[in-house]
Image (cartoon, rainbow, N blue to C red; front, side):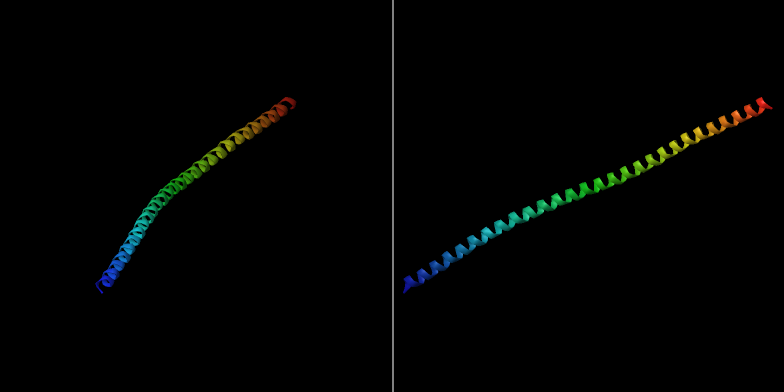
Length: 103
């Protein structure tokens, strides 16, 4: 009878050791997975930070290009206006000259 009891307790002990070994493997896998999740979280945080930097840069570029467009438009307007004024003055002088010459 004692051999059966020893055999059963040995089997139970082996089964518990097997389960403990399996549990340790599962715990190791979970630790690895948790480390990977933390690494992914860090990478996502870095990407989010970089995306915010790019967004701010894009907004700044948009503002700069808009200001440049407005400045360019005003310069073009001033140039065309000065040409128009010069042409009007030239026409006025020509008319005055013709009127004074033929009268």
